[in-house]
Image (cartoon, rainbow, N blue to C red):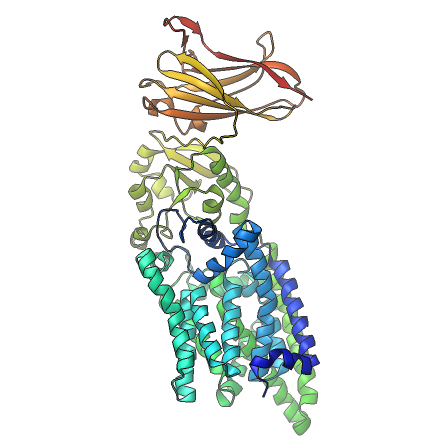
Amino acid sequence: MIEFRHWKQWLKENPGDAAIVIGLALVGLMVGIWASVIVMDDAMITFRVAENLAFGRGFVFNPGERVQVTTTPLYTMLLVPGVWILGSAPVASLWLNLTLAAVMPVLAYIVGRRLTGRLTGIGGALFVTIAPFMVMSFSMESYLYATLILASVAAYVYDRYSLAGVLVGVTALTRGDAALSVAVLLGYDVVARRRLSWRLILPAIAVPAGWYLFALFYFGSPFPATLAAKTAQGDFNWLRMNFIEGMQYHIEDWTHGDHRLVYYSYPLFLLLGLVPALWQERPWLILIGRDVLYGAVFVILNVPAAEWYYAPLMPGAALLTARGIQFAAEGIGWLVLRRRRMLIAIPIAILVMAEMLWVLGPMSAKVVRAHPDWKARSYPAPARWIAQHTSPEATLSTIDIGHIGYWSGRHIIDIVGLAQPDVSEHIAQGDFGYAIRQYQPDLILLGYLWLDGVQQMDWFQQNYVRRRLFKAEAMDQPLVLFSRRDGVNVAPAVSSEVQITPLDKDFNRQITLTGYALNQPLQPGDDLELTLFWQVEAPIEVDFTVFVQLVQADNTIVAQRDGRPQNGFFPTPAWQPGEQVVDRHTVPLPADLAGHYDLLVGLYEPESGARLQILDEAGQFQSDHVRITDLRVQP
């Protein structure tokens, strides 16, 4: 028997296995590189938590708000060293998942070889590597989850019970539903081996128990908020598809009738694989029992479909399918040559596996071609705009909090309840306006027609107004940024490195322009970035517009941009005495513009066009604009 502890010696003494292991690792790595364009929105949630943890802001999504948002604590913690070394969680995740993509098929081969033989090991390893349900979840914790499932089974079937206990316990830290793996492995050990192996039991229970104890004290609950949120979405049928319907949807989308017969032969071979597994190769029951229990729990809980929910089924399904192919081929070989049946069985099994891989490849290719998906293409740009043009203290409410939360860096109010636990019970009742009513966010980002019923409600229209539209590349409707109608000071923070020119311009005893900052030098076609610093002196009733004009020596306007303060988010009637307002304006310059110019800045009433007067110390009219002189545009 090959001892698992001597795997290096085993590879040295079995060069054929060494070549297979290296080949499978390279195949897995190439598939991982191919799939690396896939970045799920939910992965960005974990990335934000990992970076908060790495930079000392806590094991949280919103700093200062202890809610367990991520469902994968181990994956999150593994990303932290990568953040320190590589600078960001997405890059750390890429390198970690590429490594796991190479390790996973090797472990699948080790398990399949131990349970049945090389043929099953090779087929199972290739099937799990190229499976579209696996490839589809590349950016998630799925590769770590599948690798740990295989590692714990490998350790167990090679009689390394302490290691198996640690590994299956660690698997439960990757995803909470991996507690099912713990139950199945311990249950098999008791029923099949008729014993209580404390070397297996203690670490399998103690490792996840330690995390749940920490979560109870740190978050106030051992369970992630996402569990209640997903269950609530399932109760309301938010995504219109449950676990089984989601699987059927993906399969039909990938096949479209092409090779569907070959694809649906997978369940046939999987069922054939059950025959030897139940007959004489009993350790297969660990993988079988885990997959059956996993699927049953997701169906019973009516969990809505999500792409990465199917990946944990792939190691068991892939290996059992390969076992079924080998079993069928051996049966044909026995009928033809009896004792020398493998002479027939091996070529037949190889041909069938090759045909099935030939079908899986295009299906996974279709998954890869669909990425970056519409969320990855639509959300980062408006999220970065929010990061650049709004205050770090502004709160932002939205539905998909991954890309938007990561790139905006704002405190997120989650409409569907992943970040705020109290929202879930209202979502279950179909109340999608609760989070907005309850938390009154400064900003809301929605698709133009999303939650149309909420947008049409009186309380929403009384409190929020559309401020900006973002044309999304991958959406058939724009994204709309709302802000509170009464105005919200959402100015971005000003870096200490910005050079501010002081002023003291009194606008009718109501507002004082205390300074400005300009980007210099400027070239033709650049954007002129002007930041104005206002001091509010008295209540303001008029909703003023700011004008910024670039003029020649004779006051001919060559470039202009008018707009309400802070891109309309903070109208002047909302300004309060004593408040400071940072107001940024962008003026595109013509491509043929060059020379010396002045910049005129002021305020006017939109309806009449009347400008707000600037007064001198005696209260006498001085001007209706501020002139910033000698602005150079150099070609």
